[in-house]
Length: 263
Image 1 (tube, helix red, strand yellow):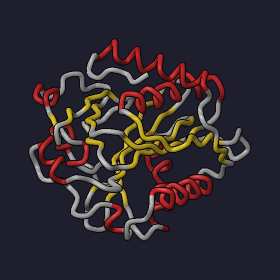
Image 2 (image 1 turned 90 degrees about the horizontal axis):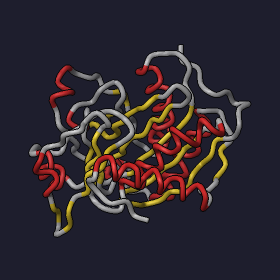
Image 3 (image 1 turned 45 degrees about the vertical axis):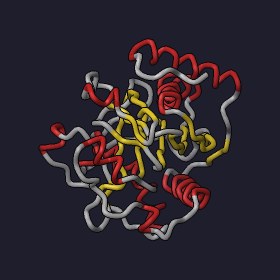
């Protein structure tokens, strides 16, 4: 059975919501996993958005379809970035992303997914949207899109639509789990990128009466505090920390050369 930091541990750090380019967001998640948590031992919760349509690839996907590098949407190139986590490609556009950085000792990966995802189930349930875990399937690896198949790591609506897709990365000292929530979504863009209809009938905003982003963030933060039985302190990054994140972003640019890092 997996064990997690106890309620007596240091307060969780809640980072402010930011909307920024995907490579900077991924660099921040990677820095939290590889540098911040091992150094401080403080768990982190954050929510964020993507400032332009972006395709993120799992860290093992080194060769995306060649035409993705030339895709444009409404006159703007689609960004292509690499995630520090695994899984298939995810289209980020008008959604809401969460990230949890903590520590898990022992236990199976599915158990850890379910433990962390429980705060999302509780929060969206309070917003009027019941969610359950996906059932998985052998065809997952053959789908270019993460959202085309729901695994036990994902959350689906009562109609079977996958509305939250999560991915993980574990190191010897820390765990990152982050995922995309289809808060809003562009079905036409999804079909344009993946060549298949969008796998959701209604977005989370449509299913919950279009709550405001601050309302959603407040509910999900409260549910996280309750589920993890932790104090949660709002604490922005310092200038020094931002400098370290941007250095991580520059390194990723050198590795992949897909999208320049905003400085």
